[in-house]
Length: 175
Image (cartoon, rainbow, N blue to C red; front, side):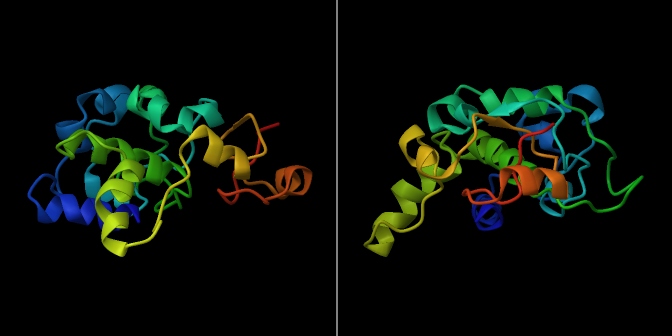
């Protein structure tokens, strides 16, 4: 979904894959991330496969995303490596979509999130409830069973202790 929406912004001339993320999101350049490109993020090569700061489930509510809750966490974090150096490509299971959502809302003319764009632009054309990204408190409460999580602790022990029966697979509470 994220790749399609990002491609849509590229097609509209609002975004370039080869451009640095900080061109669209200046605050992203903190902590050595100034040379990361949109392509690096989309290819899982930006070195942000884990976030060191705690992310609360409430940070993922649309109203909090619009108030930069997740954006601030990403801005303050540093990349473990840049451009595939020191570890190559690491799967950014969760962080990639958070980062691309932040880029998207900065280039989308109305400043909408992925979820808002899908609900307002795509779903009406599908003539159904269509696709949504659970991002309201009521929707998330149906799936997420935890108050907070780290986006980097994928150990088997954590999966065993916390399970994976919620909407975002492999999100587990850190020890």
